[in-house]
Image 1 (tube, rainbow, N blue to C red):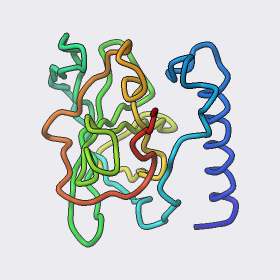
Image 2: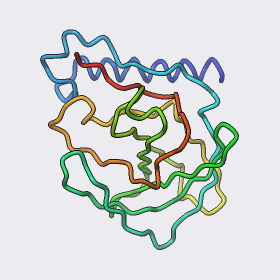
Image 3: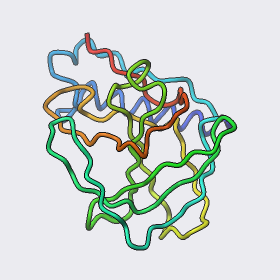
Length: 181
């Protein structure tokens, strides 16, 4: 991992901490902001920045995702990412809501879920340059995995990662579970 990448990641984390501590739209409840000292992260690790091969779903299938508020939301499964992590092959589906273009939503769980990380899973977003095609290779960076806003306040409703995105591997990268005590 280059020093430049590590510095960009650190700057991104500092910026997010400032938003969470000070911004009126922060998911941190106001009564917890004075004591908020920043989010807890795993140390950056290049092993969790992987190259993934893309399979595009030309006729994306709908997926109903349960939410923390029990009102399902509908996404379209637009791509599947295949990658090697810790010597094993894995896949994650990427989703978009109908009418959305650009950002690909990748909710997931792994073997840290409910222990070191938020008990409902974490999210990643990919913003590919241009349209993806079968066989394209993109970088999936688990160091950028983050908690949904509902990890900080029950006032938010967040999609839960579908079972197809439950990884049977430990991914100690990205944000850890919040401690709002």
